[in-house]
Amino acid sequence: MGTAEKIVYMDNNATTAVAPEVIEAMLPYLTDYYGNPSSMHSFGGQVGSAVSKARQSVAALLGCDPEEVIFTSCGTESDSTAILSALRANPERRHIVTTRVEHPAVKNLCENISTFTGHKYRLTMLKVSEEGMVDMEEYLSALSDDTAIVSMMWANNETGVIFPIAELAKIARDRGILFHTDAVQAVGKIPIDLSGLNVDFLSLSGHKLHAPKGVGVLYVKRGTAFSPFMAGGHQEHGRRAGTENVASIVALGRACQLAQEKMAEENSRVKKLRDKLEEGLLASVPKSLLNGHKQMRLPNTANISFEYVEGEAILLHMNRFNICASSGSACTSGSLEPSHVLRAMGVPFTAAHGSIRFSLSIYNTEEEIDFVLDKMPAIIANLREMSPFWPGD
Image 1 (cartoon, rainbow, N blue to C red):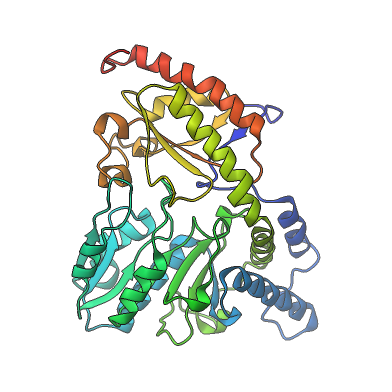
Image 2 (tube, rainbow, N blue to C red):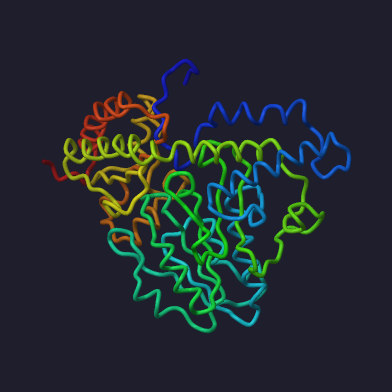
């Protein structure tokens, strides 16, 4: 694929383009300002000041105190740090509550927690409805005096479904249970104000909001017992050892500023583009269905199943037109099993295998939406003609 070819990029829940303003902000810290932020001399001190400014920008987006922000390498590190810290803070408690639709960064850790801790834990993975919403009755009944932590995502990476985090966190707090949310998909797309919430830990990742890969944040509520994941130096006030990734931290700070400025556009223009794409595909392609709650969803995400075809095959044909999206099926990672998220939602097998996630950003245009709507019906029709499972019109 040549670099001059037009790319229609609709895979922003996987990663985003680094914003030009973000690149501009970080470049000086890859060239002129290369000092160590922990150094005593003024050359390093000005770099340390840039890190502090970025911390303030992240805190402003999250509605928290800058001292509650810890810079990490990614969302996965933040998730692991939060969950393992909570378990170490409550060694007498041996129960974890999460959901069946979590990102692998949480799901795989919780399912293999004894490998990481050397202790046996009881794990409850809550069901979700056909629309991907948490079963609140099951949640209430799952909590006990033995529960150390609840970990639930703010918004699902595949369907965009938004969980009622304020309510879920309050229920946990009222029972003296720590609450963590993986907000990687939510931060920058919907308003978040942690100042009035009972969230103890929150994870985010820079490359989901137009910052580079390799930088993330763990929010730790003031007063929450905390145990570092990485031992070593005194960086991040002794909470995360290792010399800071200054250029990327500065970039993340600028990306958070942009997210605040662009959030209204995200929830208006981008949402309208998403709705046009979604409604057009459902109207023009027979036996297609929307996965996830119609309203309680991120403004940029549409997960649509096209029955009787494989998601991997759809993506390959889309790629011929330089259209980038993701399959809701795990077959793109070498497995023929459909997405664990769609399975948990009870999506029919014939549809779960043919799910495509379209995730937009502020850089998408109406012309791109029209292009995809023009190409997709023929792609699906051609694949169905080749499918031995297609029952016909």
